[in-house]
Every structure is written in structure tokens, then in C-alpha cells.
Image (tube, rainbow, N blue to C red):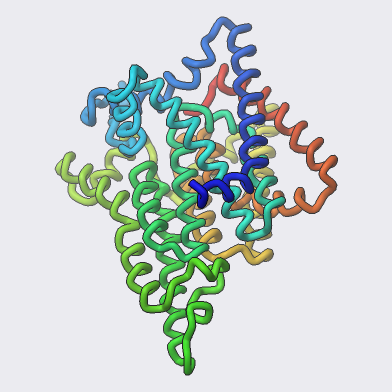
Length: 401
């Protein structure tokens, strides 16, 4: 407990700020929904993907919906960790599956906020860590962090896996990557970060071995800044190798199981996704979707907004590269961003699919950390109010598909 108390005290301002922002969002959602005669809790726990997750928790896999156009929506598209946790909570408490999903989401969002703080503090310092968490909280689609969806759970696992990589804790990094791979298909991004970091670590160890007396500090890769966490080269070598070995087992295991279940082999999961019209086409479908917005004047404004949004995402990534973000963060963010922008899935989902790419916020967090506290507070407060209002409006309307 003593080992946990000190990091928790350091993260307390970030966690309290995060809780305040998300509470504001939930209050605004409750008021807005009540005014429209809707249940805010139902919006958070029993719509869209949340229903699919609870159905998996309740009945297991095998449920599908056949649409008139021939598409087949199978619940095999949904990775199992969140339903497993919902089922576990239901088994040991009076909570329903939907209640369990909501509890997991709330706890996971706090764990994600803490993980984002840990990563940002490690790279840029405590003040930037607090700002990074607040910026993640005030994202326009931040309300998803409080829904019975898997985004918060995945972000928590990804953030702490990346932190473990940055501090040389390879077994922890690999285990969390395995769990992230059981949560969402984009778990591949965490696996890629662990593998690239591991390769760099082995390369650094090989280079250090040419020295007369190699040490833990000379053998550690440049992104491992917590030298006290880096064991001797030999110990780190087998731990790194084992971490790399177990990292992809979650995603690979589920994909292979789906292939066996469907009888279509290793590519069976791609067929399941195709039934949802999900795929990876390099962004061609998204480009056509944006281009179609310019066929009339009102929708052209939305097209301009989409182009500006994509441009902002790419610009933030480039700035992160120029600022020297650690390689594991750049690899992780690059894969998450590519999968989100280049997929042919529901285009309205792209903002929430980008939500786990929290390192994109680090350049903004660093700029905010360098500003006066009063100015930063006004900026965050204003954006938090706007985010809360937008989240309530969005969830009471089309919401996340």
C-alpha cells in the first residue's frame, strides 16, 4: 500500500480534475435527457454496442442479426474481455450485466486517466501529466468514457502497458498488451509498441555488449528513463523476450478462436467484420464520404469540418514526432490513428475510435502546462462545459454507432 500511496498522491490532482469533468458531463446528460423524457442511464448502458456486450455476457457467442440487404451482424465481432468482466460482476453481486458494464467503464476510465497521467508525467513532467488527463476528459466524445463501451477499458490497459514499456517492466507490458488484445481489435497497436520497443531494447543491449563493462544504464534503450526499473542486461533480455512473446496472445487467440468457430480459418474474423461492413481500405471509403459532403452547400460545411479534424490529428502526430516523443508512443499512436482513419467502418464512429490515441494530446498538454495556471483553468473549464453540452446533445441524438 505504501508503494501505491505515493504515485496516487502525485496523480491526485489529475484524477480529481478528471472526476470533476466527467461528473459535469453526466449531470448535464441527466438534465438534458430528463427534459426530453429519456433515461440518461439507459443511454449509457443499453444502446448500440453496449447491448451487444451485455448479450455476450448473458448468452455467450453465437447471436447474429441478418439484415434485409444480406449483411450479417454477428456478436463475434466484439472482443470478450468486457463481457467477461460484466459476467464476473453479475456473478458476485446483484448487479445486472448492464450495471456491470457501467461500473467497469467508470473504474476503467479512472484507471485510464491515471495511466495517461503516468505516461505524460514520465515524458514531460507532472504538470503536463495533469493537463493531458484533463484534455482527454474534455474530448467532444468524452461521454463515451462513461458508457458501457470498451474504450475506457482498452485505454487503461494501453496506457499502463505503454508506461510499463517506458520504465522497462517488460512482463507487465506484455501482460497488459495481451489483455488489451482481448478488448478491442486495435489491441494490435499495443502489441506493435511492445514489439518495437523490445527490438530496440535488444539492439541497445547488443550495442552495449561491445563496451568493456556494460551496465544497466548503457544497455537500456533511450526511452527507458527510469533506470532504477531497468534490471541487468541479462535479466532484462529474457523478461523482454517473454513480454514480447505473450503480448500478441490475446488478440491472436481470439481471432484464431473465431476462425475455428466459423470454420473459416485464420481469416474468419475478417469475414465477421465484413458482415458489419468493416474493413481496411486505406481510407478510400472515408475519402469518398468526405467528398460527398461537398455536393451541396449545407453539407459542405461538415466536409470542411472533417478535413480540418483529420488535418488536426495528423498535425498533432507530426508535432509529437518533432518533440521527440518516445518511439513506443509514436508506434502506438500511429497504428491507432491509421486503423481509425483508414477503416471503411461507420464514419460517425471515427472520433471515438481515435479516443484511445491519447499521445496525440501530449503536444497540447505541454503547451497548456507552460501557460499560466489561471489561463489553463479557464481554457479547460470552458472546453469542459462545451464538451458536456455536446455529449448530452450527441447521446440524445444519433450518438455513437
